[in-house]
Figure 1 (cartoon, helix red, strand yellow):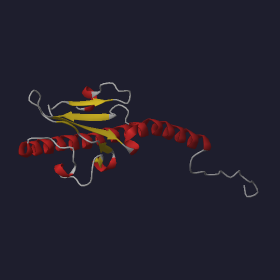
Figure 2: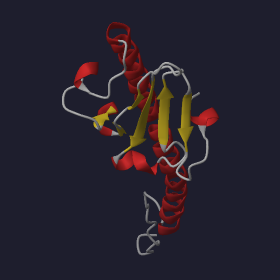
Figure 3: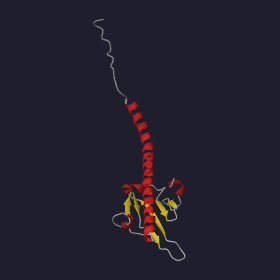
Figure 4: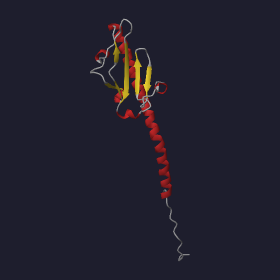
Length: 154
């Protein structure tokens, strides 16, 4: 037996190239599904910031009305610096100049506040704008101009 050479058995640890390629394919498929879903959830969470800002501004308009008997389209009257449009909600939405109608003998004074996405939030085509009015109506439109209130304001 001393002169007999037995083949050496190589002990390989690790993955074969095929196993590595299968793992990479599975990871790629998971990423292709997970990343868009994650980005969608992030956009949905930012909507809350826009709605909160609009409702806060509506409250500030009502407070201004209670002391001045008129609504205002000035940002400073509502406690904001500068002028409208104002970038709000961590820079993902812009509140446009309020639409204010003065009261007359036959009509009450009204206002309308609208927030639209800016920057990366513009990819949220389902909720392309949010609006709050003095009557308390909360509406939103998708990027095609269709009503998306039931989806976006819940």
